[in-house]
Length: 311
Image (tube, rainbow, N blue to C red; front, side, top):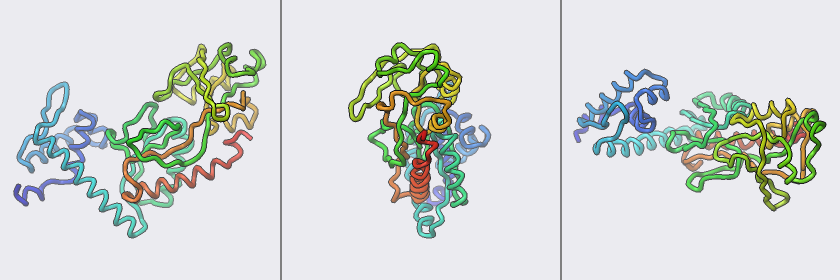
C-alpha cells in the first residue's frame, strides 16, 4: 500500500468503523458517537476510498465485514489501542491523565454512588472526558466498548481484570408496618410464608435467594405479588409496607438507621462486594489507573459511614 494512501486514513474513521461493526447499524453507531447517520456513512466512504477497497456488505437487515473489512477491522483495533497507549504513557509522564473514559454501572448504585464519585474525580482531573452509562443487564465491556464497569456482586468473569473496591453485602429487611401485620420471620425457610418483593437483576436466579450464615450458603425459593427490574421501585414498595426485600446495605442502610426498615435475620447475609472490572492492566492505562485508585479510596471511605451500615 502506498504511504500517501496510509496518511489519508484517519483514526476518527477507524473509530467509526469499529463502532459500526460493534453496533451492527449505521444509525446505532451514529447515536453512540453523537453524530448523524449521514456523517457515519461519509466517514466509512472516505475510509474505503483511502484504502481503495470495500469494507462492509450493507443490506436492509444487517451489516457484515468483507474479507478486506475483516483485515481493516483487526488493524483498526491495534492502531487505536496503540494511540490510547501513547496518550496514556504521555499522560502518566506528566501526571495529568486525559482522554475518554466510558464507564457503566447499575441504575441505583450508579446514580447514588458512582455518579457522585465520578463528579469528584472530574474535579481532580478535568482533562478526563467521562461518560457514565447506567444499565440493568449483563454487560460485555469489551464488545460494547466500555473501559470499565463498576458493579456489585462477586460473580466475576475470568477473562476480565477486577479490582476490589469495597466490602458490601445484601441484607433482608421490611417495614415496621409490614411486620406488624405479618410478623417477623424467625428462620430463613419462613420466608416461604411471607410476601417477598423480588428484584429481577442481571443474571440472578428469579425467585431464589441464596444467603450465607457464616460460611454456609442456604437457598430459599421466595414468592410475592410484586416484582420489578428496578431496585428503586423494589425499595419503595418495601417502604410502603408490601413485603420483604433482599437489598444491598449501601441502598437500605440509611432507611434502617432511620427506622423506616427493620433488618431481619441478621445472622444471614449475601456477599455482594463492589468491584471495578476492566480489560486493560492498570500499568497500561493511566486514565483507568487513576479512576480505579480514586474509586477505591472513595468507596473505602464510604464503607465506614454509619448510615451505610444501618447503625
